[in-house]
Length: 616
Ligand SMILES: Cc1cc2nc3c(=O)[nH]c(=O)nc-3n(C[C@H](O)[C@H](O)[C@H](O)COP(=O)(O)OP(=O)(O)OC[C@H]3O[C@@H](n4cnc5c(N)ncnc54)[C@H](O)[C@@H]3O)c2cc1C
Ligand SMILES: *[C@@H]1O[C@H](CO)[C@@H](O)[C@H](O)[C@H]1NC(C)=O
Ligand SMILES: *[C@@H]1O[C@H](CO)[C@@H](O)[C@H](O)[C@H]1NC(C)=O
Ligand SMILES: *[C@@H]1O[C@H](CO)[C@@H](O)[C@H](O)[C@H]1NC(C)=O
Ligand SMILES: *[C@@H]1O[C@H](CO)[C@@H](O)[C@H](O)[C@H]1NC(C)=O
Image (cartoon, rainbow, N blue to C red; front, side, top):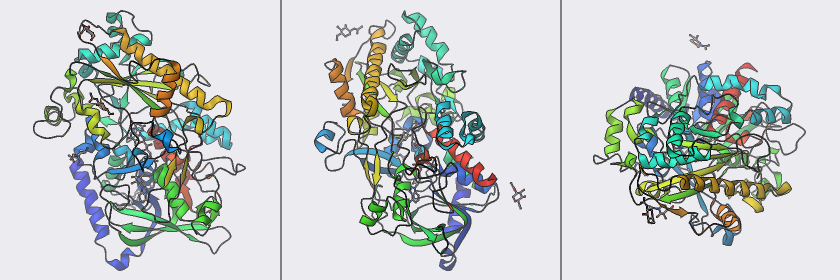
């Protein structure tokens, strides 16, 4: 079925790209949406399903037939697939001597931050985890803007809309429970969260908690416990934004998807009192952006016009870059590059936020049984691939590759949280993940002997990240500074509280590992690789956190705010303040980083934007 969709999509793309050059220069649509990821994809689909002509411009191409896309177990490999990858390098610290303390640091470049240039954006290469936002995320936007349509009760309808196209489901618990070493670790996590203490009670408790859906349990925003992790999948195959776009084309809606096209500039009509966005310039050609390992070509210039609106959805880095290159952004920065200022927007590219994540990696003497025969390359010797391929659509039969490898999580409200919301999500699986560096995906699966607990710190307090132009060349990547911990937001001990919460999480991860160190069913034990058995004092653990934390939910670079806030970039209806016909709809729009995992919040924002645009 997926093949049929793709064939239809390719036919549409071919029809557009084979049009005569004269028509090429005269592409006119009701709406132009730039970027097909979590923000742009659902929105473009909704606008087209309501019979508007829509041009969806995507720098990458469709990789829906690529097993790296469709197999959840390949979530690490897919981020280093050259057809998909955008290897962006960022600074956690501007001081390079400090940055070098991270073993993931690449001299002269910084820290790898994987992004995807492909249909579906980062949703096509992410870890598939589906945790819906907290009510406080939305109520905060309602209170900042005075727009009650952002209240959590009103936002529920957009989650319902998302579920019209987004299937979700957890890893099949039966797969997990076949592996005694895995049970040993997960039961330890269950025990730390109060189930146990003897192994049998914890295993029984584990079985029960793995049935708890963390998105649909009453009071879940502050409900501590040990849960299954829902994924964006159907029957053990990744299904998401990319498939919604393809379905939209396939059902005859007037959606034109133009892949291999990189937008360089938004064009404005400046003859009226307020500048109005009327279209975009772009370059046709594959892998043009220099973050792609396949880049090098210059592309062919082209242009498209919008009768109604232009919507930018390039993600937190690229939306900022495209707007700045088009004359919207902090006046001094634009002028320093000789860019004609269309609208001074001092907040654009500031306020960037992310999670902090850290690992506890434990090396066993033996392999995890669940990974037997998994070579993670889809070649004939890859037994796990054969099992996945031979059992289409039946989650319970697909084996390890039907899962992203991250099975269950401790949900915790830390001692340093500002309110009762869960702010530590400590998830475990047989993956050797220590954060992002070149070829991290190979390192993550090379050994079958490593179990890791990863902590994701939600509701982080650091708002000091920035995205700035490196040059006026649209194919260059921007300069990205996160200004981690004490080099960022420090008011009210913001940095100290985030670090201490992460140290608490490391201690809980260690406690989970320690619970059943000599668990009789598994009959083996392990040594901690990271932070390492010698890293025990609070001071040393804090240093480990500061040196080695990472993130992958960058957001908030074009924030929605009150019209009286000079740092607000967007009004509560996604409109770029001071410009007509231009909106931003992606991870950039949030004033504060939402929830625990961000894609669900972006999907909801995308559905809300469609409603606002279509229904006023
Ligand atoms: C490795 C990794 C794992 C993750 N795992 C999870 C997870 O498990 N759960 C979760 O909730 N979130 C996860 N995330 C985060 C989530 O996937 C992203 O936050 C989300 O996809 C961002 O949505 P977006 O629309 O802002 O940008 P994107 O999804 O990045 O989409 C932007 C799109 O715009 C295109 N584009 C950009 N500039 C241009 C241009 N000038 N012209 C044309 N096209 C352009 C890009 O090619 C891209 O396709 C993960 C992220 C990463 C990197
Ligand atoms: C879209 O247009 C088609 C053909 O004109 C029509 O049949 C259909 O009902 C319209 N759909 C919507 C949602 O307006
Ligand atoms: C998947 O990505 C890896 C890189 O991690 C690459 O070597 C491999 O060829 C890709 N697989 C497919 C089926 O394209
Ligand atoms: C785990 O990954 C790290 C790099 O992140 C690597 O140094 C280490 O050797 C790996 N461990 C195993 C057992 O493969
Ligand atoms: C666990 O490891 C220790 C030290 O390496 C060893 O002495 C002990 O026998 C191991 N226990 C089991 C059950 O493997």
